Length: 411
Image 1 (spheres, rainbow, N blue to C red):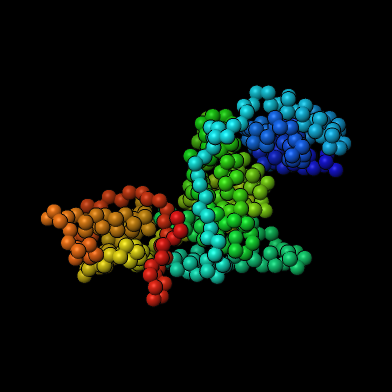
Image 2: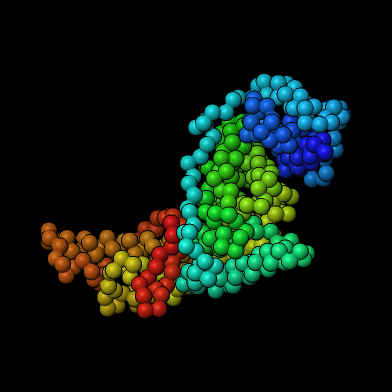
């Protein structure tokens, strides 16, 4: 019966926003969801969702307000549901701005598409080529095994153990979280968890606005681009509100609600420092119930960072001269204990500085000889005092395939 469907949708959105009661605004949301194309044209779902802010703090099942009960009693079929929707839209949306294409609040994030030629075996082979990350690789394989196992049991009409496909990646910067997230998105597509397998990367700036009502729009826009794939939120703990003026709660509530609405074809990976991520997940019951699988990304060892440097040199077709690898081992050994160490980002920055020194040396006499463009020598490796690390985009590295060229992550 349509009344039951309306109430179910209204309760779901109230739970997502942690509101203690189902009110007329929640019923309007439920009516729009239940009526679909028959809902009022003046009440698009994105506009109705603006009525949900601000988020509450309730954690139990919401009660139904007397006013909402009276509206529900009037709904007996589709025509009466349409009448109720029209009346609520006129009453509740009078002060809510119309939405236009390109309105403030939309984001500039773009998906990274998954190759159409992927197979589960081919993507797992790419995972295995990543340098280090042994425990991470094992965790990803276990994750894919569980998801595949449940798919097969579902097809055989057997009960399955609920296993959320949302993930938390913990670890320091430069440890390969984004690269592995991209591979997980592609794996989810090949086993049938997701329909497209694209990865959408977002940060606090992509999800939180500075004005009332705009944050929900930004989150909705990012989620729409993520459906069929994975939304990867780096430094997700930054969504936690910083004060009463902050709209972090609105972003989290919208995220939780849309995760529920699109649970069949959306996965979210939240990433960041271990302690900060624990506090972030514990800050909201909706997050805690959905993020149950954690994968920790350890720092790279000095030996692994040397391998990463070698892969970057091979990708650039730069030969490493005598003494270079020994110098790198010393540099990385000195840095790995630094609490602000950038892991693979540091290796990338060091390689770029060494390449710049190589170019400056070749250009020092005003001309560049053919013999000077391929070899990086010991003098090109920056001394510690000469190298100033700068942040780069999150990157990962794959070792060269046996007998073949080095490969780079999709980006």
